Image (cartoon, rainbow, N blue to C red; front, side, top):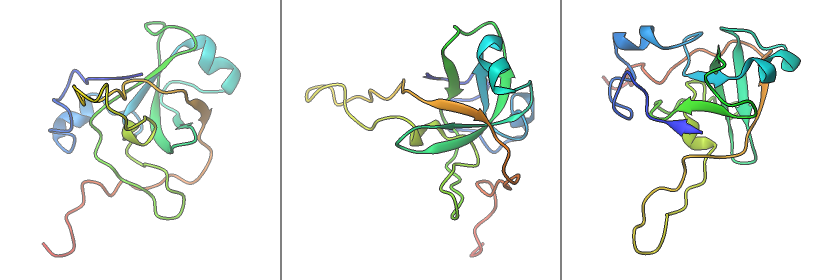
Length: 138
């Protein structure tokens, strides 16, 4: 599932000091039920790779019984930060995991609030965030 973050409005302030209040391992958090985390060896604060046939994201584990077992949640609004070598979104932008289809021909709203994903403890190299770096032309 994707939901609105309590600390910002969509992607506004994703770069700000406020990020320190909710980021885990300097990434967007992913809420995982303890019974889903345990067999995967995922502990609070670990880096997690969430992925499906559309893409993959690197997120920080938030282990909680406040989410239904078998579900995970990543807040929407993370700035895209794709690693050129692997394609993984280093900032946890869940849009790479969701479908880009409208709710109907009439409404044309976004229907991408849920998606089927797999999760695993991330064991690769820690990838530096670059989404908040100033462009070279500045």
